[in-house]
Structures are given as C-alpha cells and as structure tokens.
Amino acid sequence: MKSGEMARLTQFVENEVIQAFATYATIVVLKMMLMSVTTSYFRLTRKAFDNPEDTASFGKGENAKKFLRTHPDVDRVRRCHLNDLENIVPFFGIGLLYALSGPELSSALLHFRIFTACRILHTFAYLIPLPQPSRGLSWAIGYVVTFSMAYNVMKSVLYL
Ligand SMILES: N[C@@H](CCC(=O)N[C@@H](CS)C(=O)NCC(=O)O)C(=O)O
Image (tube, rainbow, N blue to C red):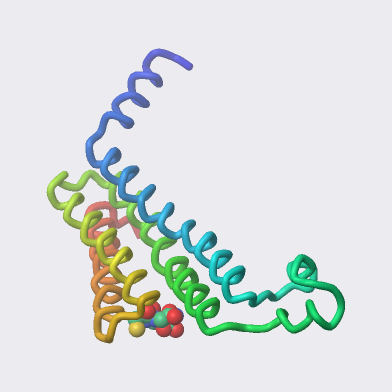
C-alpha cells in the first residue's frame, strides 16, 4: 500500500465518529447474535425442535418425535431475533453512511447511544416480557433514530 493511502486509512480509523460507530454497531450486532444462543437455550430447556435429527439425543422413534414441536418461549425469542434483523441491519447500513457523511461527534454519539439502549430495552421487554408500551416505545424510538440518521445522510450528500 502506498504511503498516501496508508495515511488516509489511518485518518479514517482515527476518526472519532467512525470509532463510535464501530463500537456501537459491534455492541448491537453482538446482542443480535446472542439471540441465537438464547434460542438454543430455550430449545434445549423446553425440548422443542424443528428438525428430526435434533431430537436424536432425546430418544429414538416415536419417543423422539414428540419433541418435534413448537413452544411459546422458543417462538418468542425467534420473533425477537427477527425484529433485531429488521432493525439492526438497517441501523448498520444507514449508520455507516451517516458516520461517513461527517456528522458532529456529539450528535452521532446521541444517535448511536439511544439506538443501542433502545434495542437492549426492546430485548428485555420482549423476553421477560414487560407490559406494553415498553416494547412498542423501545422499538419506535430506535426506528426514529435510524430515520433521523437517514435524513441527515440525505441532507448532507443528496445527489439525484
Ligand atoms: N415486523 C414487526 C413490525 C412492527 C414492529 O417492529 N413492532 C414492534 C413494536 S410493537 C415489535 O416489537 N413487534 C413484534 C415483532 O416484531 O415480533 C411486527 O410484525 O410487529
């Protein structure tokens, strides 16, 4: 790599908004990945599986077949995971564009922190579950934050 390119890359990595985005994006993506482990935990403790081969360790033939079933706790954590996908994937894409569009650090941090807090709250509200509107509000505020970042991207780089 040429030294000019190297210097630009170093500048990019040292940019505080990029660092903040990398931090909060990693936190929310890890949180989302945790939903897979939580699903496995609920599947094993509730003995509820989708695939015949997964029930093999619980017996043979008809005995194992009874564990090919749904369970409300497994369904709940899967809905929570799906909701993360619907919200964290857009945050990742829009958030990266936003971070690259040169926002103020304070305003970027405010967006990233509110979104992250909302998604953590949404998970607790969904899994405990907490009474509504806790889940609805945590989803809606996180959604508005992503929209606000999209608006800021459009405002600063609009090129039609
Ligand atoms: N795909 C969502 C779209 C709307 C949404 O994300 N609503 C929030 C607040 S009520 C939610 O937590 N929905 C539950 C879910 O996605 O399972 C749904 O079917 O509800």
